Length: 163
Image (tube, rainbow, N blue to C red; front, side):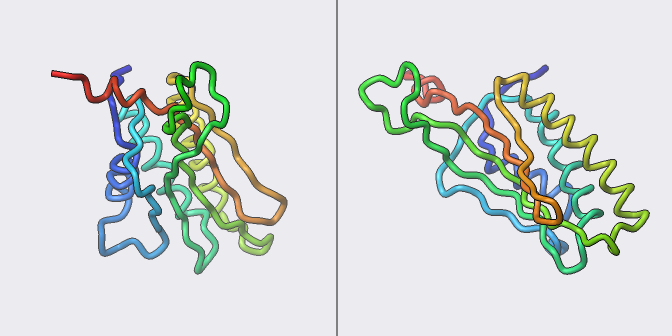
C-alpha cells in the first residue's frame, strides 16, 4: 500500500478524466467541494477503483440519467480530541449518485454492468477501510442509489509543516 496526502477533489477529476475525456461526459457530472479536502490514501488503488466504478455505473445507467460524483465537507459536531472548538473537525464525504432502472430496462448489458459495479464497489471499500474510512450504500427499491464514502481528513498542521 502506497499512502500519500491526496486532495480528493483532484482525485475524482482524474478518475472522471480516465473514464470520459472532457468532451465526452454526457452521462457523467462532477460536483467537487469548494474547499480542498486532503486525506491520506493509496491514490492509485482508490483512483482505479473510482474509475472502474464510474465506468460500470455508466453501463447500468437508464437512458437519459446522469451519474454524479462529488465531494463535500461533513462536520463532526463533538469529535474526540477537538481542541478549543477547532472548526475543521469533520470528514470528507465522497459520493456517487446513480439512477435506478425500471424492471423492463434490466438488459444483459445492465446485468454485466451491475456485476462490474459491485466488484468495483468492493475494491473501493477495501481501499477505504485501510484508512479507517467508511462506505454506505443508500437506496430504496426502484429509486436512485447513492454510495457515500466517508474519509478522515488529515490534520491541517500535519499537511503544512512549518519550515
